[in-house]
Amino acid sequence: MKLIVKCQKCRSEIKFPHKIDDRLEYAKNVDENFTLSCSSCNTEHEYHVDNIVATDYTLVEILKNRVILYSISFVAVAVISFFFIGSLYLTFFASILIPFILMIRAKSNDSKQNLEFNRHKVRGRPSGIGMRR
Image (cartoon, rainbow, N blue to C red; front, side, top):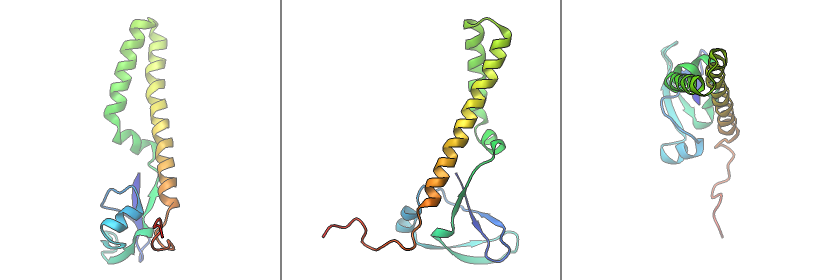
């Protein structure tokens, strides 16, 4: 999940420097407001936790981030399918198809995480939620 904040002045994307899974946990542990500096316009602004947006990785970024996983799966599928199937064409097809399916599943999982992250905001949340009387 790629977390970004839009600069208030030039609207360029600023990469969020921390890895978080939930806005509410970040607000509880650190603070609701934080300061980031934009490298494009060299200004520093204060942002709220709700300004953080999760965006999808492109297929190229997913491939770049998980190149070792895809390489290992490519080699493993190629070796196993060559010994069990015996056909060179089927081996080549399977060794390309399996890593491609893994990449599509990773993109789908990333999209689901982004939707879940972007759905929940901190503002407007009533205080004392989940407290029993």
